[in-house]
Image 1 (cartoon, rainbow, N blue to C red):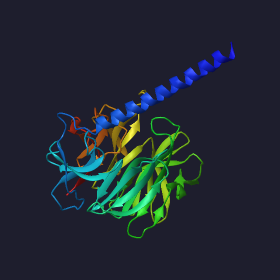
Image 2 (cartoon, helix red, strand yellow; image 1 turned 45 degrees about the vertical axis):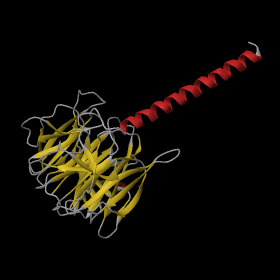
Image 3 (cartoon, rainbow, N blue to C red; image 1 turned 90 degrees about the vertical axis):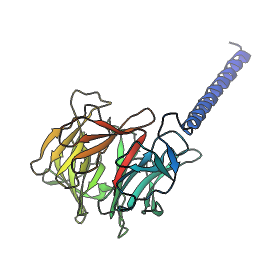
Image 4 (tube, rainbow, N blue to C red; image 1 turned 90 degrees about the horizontal axis):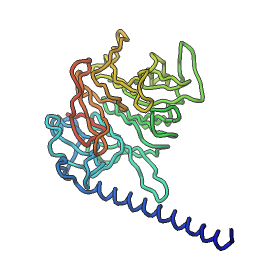
Length: 342
């Protein structure tokens, strides 16, 4: 083939690839612009004051607003007894969020020219920043202890899904009263089968704190298996209790955990079902949700849990009895990461 023709083919290929790249950028930009426009029939969202104070504004939900429009991804609030009603947006954007006792933790993205970076921001009751901590990866879980003293968050350091096995996480703990910061739960001593345990493949995620704020439950993954662990903050230890539990969430009365469990025979991309574990008897039972839930549930009270599932505009929230009865009911459209306050 003549040299001129080879050069022409090469130049044509470069031009084609550049055109394809430009088209992809234009489409992505158009999609982003579309998300900034409120959709017909969506929830009404207006800018206003949002408080995390327990007694401020009655019983309410504070959550990440996923509705398309200028307030998408902002923390918003709605009455707990009218969750599909008008929303008040705060102007504070979060990828993951949780709050208790007037304290919030907001996992945010800092948009960069080449690559985004992430940080965990501790918020006071007025959504003012108390402290900020850089994150090593993509935010996935956040929790505040019932008394507002402790915060925990998990990020994906490698991978971006719990469905497979090719991922790595980092879970951090922060004592808001003393300022003590544990960058990784992997620094805690692990007790497994009655013996101290160490392995390079250890990962933690899904912290849920006890009411006395002295301990926690979480997921430990190692050797291709997941475990429920009980953590002791003073002793800096975690102890395995049971296999095949992920993202536990402790009931307000401290007697039960609702968690997601891998069920044999389900799709590798959607392997989970929700279960409840009685901590006194260690007996477990499935909940009445037949879809795969990749979330850490939130308890609204001692009887009901709320969780997210994919929706038309990001995610929707569903409620479900925690005793295995009833059926799931959609609580809110276009919402994620709820905290029930007041």
